[in-house]
Amino acid sequence: MPTTDEIQAGFKDVQDRICDFLAQADGRRAHEDRWDYGKGSGGGVTRVWEHANLLEKGGVNFSAIRGSSMPASAVTQIQIPPNTPFLATGVSMVLHPWNPHIPTTHMNIRYFEAGDAWWFGGGIDVTPYYPVLGQVVEFHQALQAICNESGYSYAEHKKNCDEYFFLKHRGETRGIGGTFYDHLRDDKEKAFKYCLALGRAFPNLYRPFIEANRDTVYTEAQREFQLYRRGRYVEFNLVYDRGTLFGLQSQGRTESILMSLPAAAHWRYDYHPAPGTPEHKLTDFYLKPQDWATISVQK
Image 1: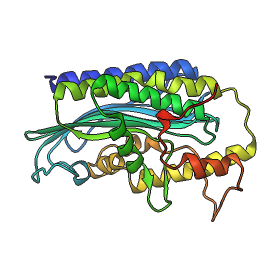
Image 2: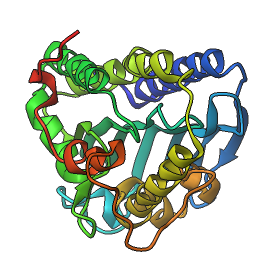
Image 3: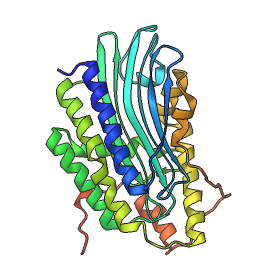
């Protein structure tokens, strides 16, 4: 059974691997910021790209903190007595590329320990602006393979993702989904390996989106649509995201918690894309749960 030190070391390795991949893809290394947790012990390492080559904004954060009482947002299914000391460690990342044809992506893996209770959580999802069906299908098929190899249900974790990353006030998903899981307590070794498998697979999951789309020319109108859709991303993170709530409620480092927000976003009053346009297809088809992994795509 993995120790907390082994879990933290594994998560830190995931951060290093992802940052090495992104440094190569972007052509620039991240700005690194090491910080201490002022309300307890521990801290983290935040690595951020801003106005870089590939990435307009992106961050990969590792943290391992100990505190005296678990925030309510972290214990939605497990009843933890008040004032129970806790350990929380994980890796969280969000990438906002310049090019509207490369999707925004989010991933995190995490471990909590409070008293005698422990659990793992995590997931990955993609938020495209101009999705390509074949790329979406291949992404989901790759996630299905990771779940199968790790002994977890892709169908269940995909459903969790569709339901969690849903903007209730907009009636739409945040993107084309992925996988999401929380409160895994079945087998510590198995759950830890699943988290590591997802984290270490990230470069291979995201690389196809970069390689296929980074040289695609985009118009100013497509850039404006990207900024408009980023507004929905901001809405989700500030209204619904439990990771953001946990970070703020635990009085963590605000700069690291809010690194997920894009450098720029727009809001437009009562905007509706014209039927038949790619922008309309995004909201009419892609932002509704689909059985992506089984869709047949003609080559």
